Image (cartoon, rainbow, N blue to C red; front, side, top):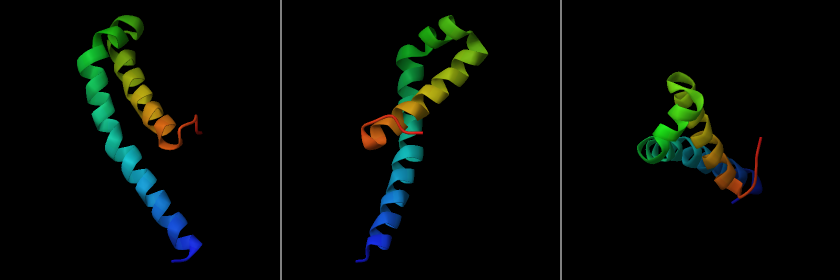
Length: 68
């Protein structure tokens, strides 16, 4: 298997992990910490912050460091 093929599959698996894992993290945050986000940021902004935090958390775990 060529290195290009390996890198391609790595990217595909990263996307599956990132976009497949985010809903689970978001549901956990909503169930266990939703009130904190709502009280801190307000109802509408709290929901947006919770969604963005879930995405950032999954992205950080993807390679074990902060990624942009």
